[in-house]
Image 1 (cartoon, one colour):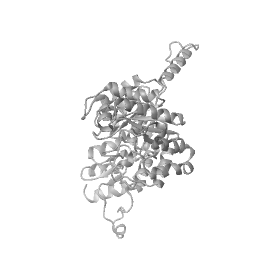
Image 2 (cartoon, one colour):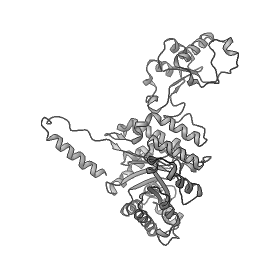
Image 3 (tube, rainbow, N blue to C red):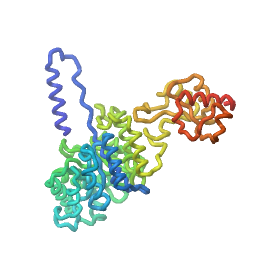
Length: 445
């Protein structure tokens, strides 16, 4: 894929330079790098504590995320539990054609106890799921292979190749999750790294027919600069048409940064979950990843980034809230881009600057990601908010950081009272300014 793109760009540039009048002018810009978004909320995300969903819930979320524009939807492991098997059975008739084309069924390489791949029950379940793509997990660490899986290094390589070959023969596209790849390549808490073996796992998967190999920071223990270096090594080791992906966990608090570092290292597929749900401290948060790729791609790759869901970026917050609501989770206000507090301002200096120009304290326009700006009234910002309300700037609304107790008689006693039973964002900026400007003057703010 990368090689074909380079040839195409070179040919286009040569043809353009041959055109009359082209001498002395710049050639066409390099096309932006295509990065695929792979959502595993409905598989890996459900391993998070207190995360559970019915088949109905899964179908609703899959439909929502498909319409938002993610490229892949990993929705369960049909060979491991009846619920996921039911999901794939119902998906055939209850999801749109667009959503069905994006479905991925998850599984693993054949068991040590299965003599051949075609006799392995969970591999057969992947075929019977009806999903066009299967993603199988394998060990990509020498230590994990021998000490945890209890297989020889050679047997592990055979399990990878035979499983991929079987699924390809059955007509499925195959992705391979190289579990513990970064631990195996870089070394980790359990053992020193063995770069050659981890790379060999990737090569074997590709030679057997996998279209994508996904490098996993399964324990979430590595840092961005190491992730970028290790990813670049794999990109150099596999054919250019192979998609190299990343799957990061947030145990060190840098899953998003690691995912973006992998893209800098050459990865063109990013796995993650909506709102970062997942086991332990969660998976890489796709809300932040999509926001960064779509709005700051040129800071990651000089040619820029192309993500399919960028055309629906204004629906990002809506999709994030829908997933939380459907999973019965309380939305985290401090979430980047989509959280209720992502563009909420409280400090007095911030509020003063914001009234002059929103760019002073906001890294992006909140409307780009479907969010909104809020200014909170508190002892830290009351005087500045009172000033701002008198020299009004459209789009900046003042709201109290502590809800005001409300009783039905308040409106009669105080003409400028706010109804605390309404959401603060239900008030127009002008109404909020009128209400809180009057209150601040009465209270001597």
